[in-house]
Amino acid sequence: MKFGIAIGAFACLPATCGAQEPVERAANLKRFQYTETHMGVPFRMTVYARNRGLANSASAAAFARIESLNRVFSDYSTKSEVAKLRAVKAGQPASVSPDMAMLLGRSLRLSKQTNGAFDVTVGPIVRLWRRCRRTKRLPKPESLERARQRSGYHRVTLSGKRLTLDAEGMRLDFGAIAKGFACDEAIASLTKHGIQSALVDGGGDIRMSDSPPGKDGWQIEIEPEKANTAATMLTLRKCGVATSGDRYRFVEIDGTRYSHIVDPRTGVGLTSRLMVTIIAPNATDADAFASAVSVLGKKEGMRLLESREHTDGLIRDYLATTPTSHRSSGFAQFTVR
Ligand code: AMP
Ligand code: MG
Image (cartoon, rainbow, N blue to C red; front, side, top):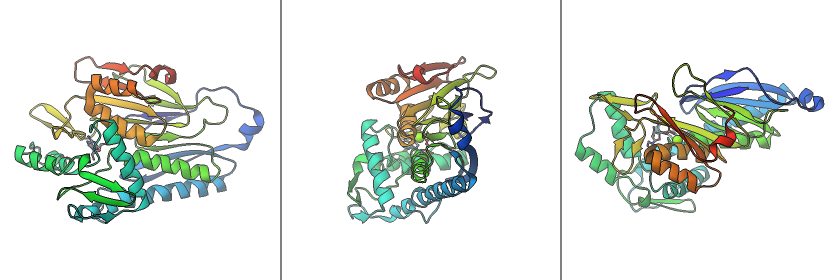
């Protein structure tokens, strides 16, 4: 089985490689596939289970877990917890749910680790660029400045389940991490139901548990640098992989393409035309690092990857006429071709 990552696109191709497994184990496990739309993208789940009854109930519980996270982190629903937190007054502590405390805590740590390239408070800036995608006009400098004053992860304090925001008008934005987290939580739910071999793909953010029976890992396909050339193929197990880029969500103004990923330091949508794929121990980290490395760029981004254990990446640069690829030193171990 091969899975393709192409930022929002997905290809599931027939099984191709892998050693033969002991007949007994192979005979006991069957492959089941499910797709449901959550968080605005199709979540695809592949599980190996003894029978359909177990696969159905385990996948239903995993999808329910994803939907419960959507109710907390959705940026598009006015009823989600993250939407309600917009009403919190500066300096007044608010109680948050266990899921919010957990992912906000991780996000704040990731914000520090990436030196603010990933920043969970980037909501006011993202909102300006969403409007810009609709109007095709760049945000006014004074609007950008105001949005920047309402952002900054150092303006958030989380103590247990109590959150304090330092400025009025702040908006948390989990768009760069929530789908990865949802994949991780779905896999945790499947594992609890006795499923050891599964893959959950949330529109390009992927988490997998153990390999399909008899295989070395799950085959993941990254779209090629150029059309009509061979795709990069990865074999992965028990980890997360995520891709960020400007392929589908961007605005073009006066010949410049501005990505939906913004540089929190300047408030400007990225114009660097990178596509970043990250392999990490889980999909939450992979998702956040894919966005962070996009912001940091080739040199700084690669330095960050090399400084971290168990985090590798591929950066494709589409700005030049001939695209180029750059891999962290550990990336090759996962590459089949
Ligand atoms: P991804 O596709 O995972 O790179 O996430 C992009 C989404 O994350 C955007 O649509 C925004 O909602 C949000 N976002 C944009 N820039 C950043 C950033 N620098 N740090 C954190 N979140 C961001
Ligand atoms: Mg991301």
